[in-house]
Picture 1 (cartoon, helix red, strand yellow):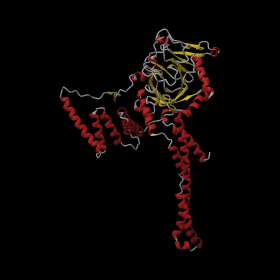
Picture 2: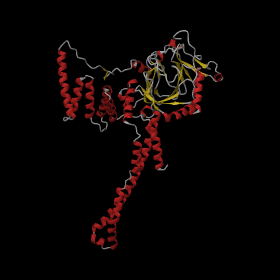
Picture 3: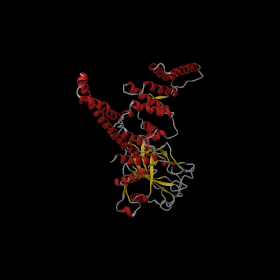
Picture 4: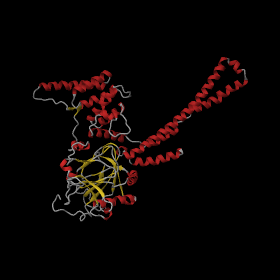
Length: 536
């Protein structure tokens, strides 16, 4: 491909990227960055070859002139006695050396710098780097991974192992620090210091690490350790003004604490330390511990008694003509609420086609504001999604029809097929698919009532993590490519089944693709008629 054509192509590709930044929210789109970096490496190698060619020419000239000047300086007059030598000396100094000067000044960087400049404006942003760092911390918390494990890249199911440098760990700590997250600041600054102490080569100084670490430790109220770290900093840099000021301040606080401790009516509190680390602060999610335990496969309430109530069968959609000859394999995942898994719902070819259709349209996944009904992004949902219509491709209509045949519900009032790709540590924290009584306008714009049921297609296997979990009753369902899970969000009475609050666990290793169809109440009144009680 000609260079200018290549640049036009790259520019057009990256213009699409620019419209939707936040690369960290979608592994599918991050793969494009791999090819961009490969292109930059090729451009850099071309620049190196051009520089080597130029240096080779200059070296050849220098060697030739070295031989010539050695001869001419040994007997200048005798050398110039030959008229040709005299002429060539004048010519060299007037013309040849000027040509050499032009060669030396020749700029071989143009191609590489032009390519880099064009691509740099579409590179991941500071927001992406921060998001990627927070994703690693999310994985660290959810799957109880210590910084050493993450730094050494010791993760299950990984094909290409990679590790974090002192500079990487320091960057993680700084991201946490700038976010006011002193818990992770301490963990990552300690890891950076540990690797530094082990002799790893780095441009980050121990003074910089200790500066952040000592202050973060102080934020936990651990004065003794903050002073110890600050003294170590000062021993490395006695001119560090802030450290000296902090040490004096810490000493005053410690003196006040001692005075208080002598007063028996005042009790001093010590920071809570577990396994050598400070206690993780509580956050906004009440079921955080249960949710994360289920993501790790812990606390699943699958008892032998419940297991006996789960069966496998062939499902023909209540004798749907299309499924009589080729029924689907149906497996009970949970008894109450009833959650089932269907096998071989989508073929590999259909999955690839839907991914191909969705990828150019992927945008940061949104959630519906319960008060306004407006879609907005949220930190607790990290993925990118797109919506596919039946007119986009026959495969979309085919998959929609298949979901209708399996469920016995109509797709005419269902939402469009949503396709989602999860990025680094991609997740969707515990949420309800249906609207609650305190958010009556959530689906008012659609005019089709509440979300009666969810049909979730798994379009990829996931090496580690990425389960769908239900904290209320302790279920965990793991992705299997080509399968789908289905459950009702509402009782037959139309009341919401609050047990169906669920979450998509962070993807630890792998790339998770799903698609889902939300069926609504309207059009299904006779397909799923009301029960006799509120909870039928």
